Length: 610
Image (cartoon, rainbow, N blue to C red; front, top):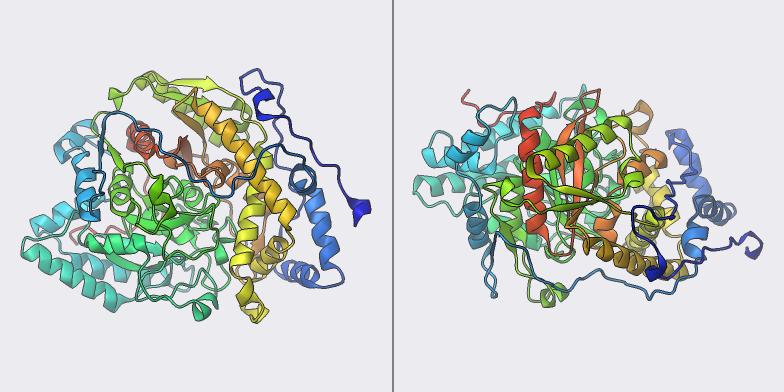
């Protein structure tokens, strides 16, 4: 097909690219050339892509029209490829408590994190009356300690609430699998520990949901499919799950997700479409859709997700909760489906940034067999007592990128930045961040190649009828990428990391909206076939990619709502290993917005006394 070959871009050396506010670098908006498809159209499209006659030509044209050829495939780059975004440790900030060099146990790290939080009296002074607030980990712990409520009582309410949410008229589809007997057994053991006055940690008896991409006994790990658990049995807990279990947490089941993580909507034709608790006619976002929705709806104060392309932060923003994606390698990946080796990370979804800090303490730190153990910095925790104690924070903002979202999001996030300056004196520095669309395409090529390679041996024997139609399309596209394209994408990874580190030399964090759009409606034609909506998909991932492709830590915090009452998130992206600073910044932002948080349409109060 040489006659169809595009001329690739010849990229300038990194040092000759101007990153200043007056740069001549052009901001390229997402150039998505693919119509929305669902129902019968998705089936036809999948059949054509899988056909020997039409498939190769259609895939070539798709890549050409969406600028993958021009910007990645045939591009000329001087950088060497960066295959794994592991970062050397370069120190940490102030106002932190850090683990010892030999690493503390999860229980000890949870205690260290808890010691960094405000007391209930201090919290009441800062926020004497809130219009709405989700119950936190410390709320559960205090109620259990006082014997007002027991873990068994909460577990029974949880089981009833999940059953209620699954009613046929409009099921919320929060979970792929949950086991009431196992939940009650864990709750009974936790209740006995409290009766003896011997809780393991503040996480003892706290309900935590696990995305069905992470191994957690006694459940199979499906990855949102109908077949993967049959060829890859779950034989033990993932490392992050083991650490939570060792702290006494009650693991309540496997949350719903987009099939194979290959989408942004959370629409799953096998297990149902997870609905947004703020408006059940709209998406929760993906791929960690169920994890975001259960936290939003009050079913759990905490859930784990996996973030390979914004898959924790994106649904967190759409559902109005906190989403934290640590630095690549900070949380061991052992026991997580190997769908995206170099871009995926276990992430945390919670109702508050304080809860994210506690869970971060529980699951962070290397295991001896980890490659990351050789370079990882100490796990540090910020003192979340007085956000105004830091007055020197500098926030980098690229105006054209920041504003490439709906008007409601742009205004809301700009107002949030203004509050940070007015209250804390934090300054925003205007910068230029080049080739953002190039990075999106290079990441798509990378995550797609890694996903298709990881399951290739299984696909050869698989009955394609077991795959959802949108997943079949995704896998057809993923399988069309070649080794040259993958290498070029890794050169772009190296190039982008150099740009970001130059920005971080001028600023502490980079600030963006979390998504370019709020939760969009679920249409009836998607429920059985899934949906292809690459335009909305590109808008949802617009600000997510650096966290995954470059292995950087990032966090989203709810900062307001659009005119329809749908949540809006603001994202902070940090230097490698700077989770402590990021959590501090997110806490300061939360303190300015929490009084305006709204109760979702679907909400369950598990600590009420009724």
